[in-house]
Image (tube, rainbow, N blue to C red; front, top):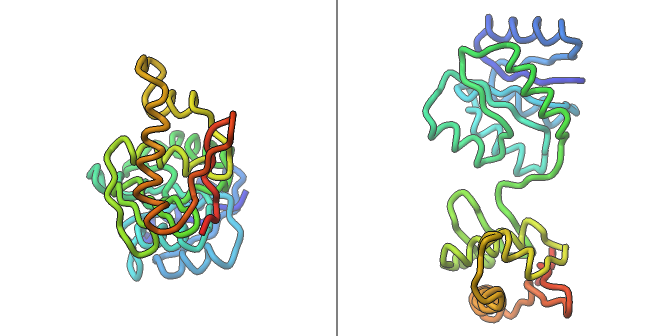
Length: 225
């Protein structure tokens, strides 16, 4: 397994390389964000260990650029920052895990093994279908350049559908995931909210992104225009 460590503290970088190589990993090290981003684009890595406080380009920017380029290599953020806002920010822009310094080396290895088992699967920070975009972190939705205001329930329904774009989801699945398995109201509430979304996101823009599959449920067209 080949790892990239992006860490500007020389002693820490050397310690990580030595320890990880002793565990059988092949390790490349970058001392700043610019070199780290370049190496991640030039080579295929199984995981990236990324510091946040980097010269040249900070860790948040490196991770954001990787995901924007559709590079889905698992990223473990390793940093001295213990502010929960830093952790939330890193995870929201596409990092897969977050570990603060000082850390247990055994925990670091366990988390890396977990990421390696998961692999480099697509997990964009912003969900898209054609020119429809949803940012789950900021709760913002756009149709093209137009931002569209949605209620909390409409956002939850749209996120559920976008995360399964191209797939047919049943009314029962929607109820279980958006309203909860203990929901005892009228199941036709799903049709009502799908209609709300169409009225806000499809019809005003002459789109048909959310489609009804008769007898089966609903499907978001991945590239509907």
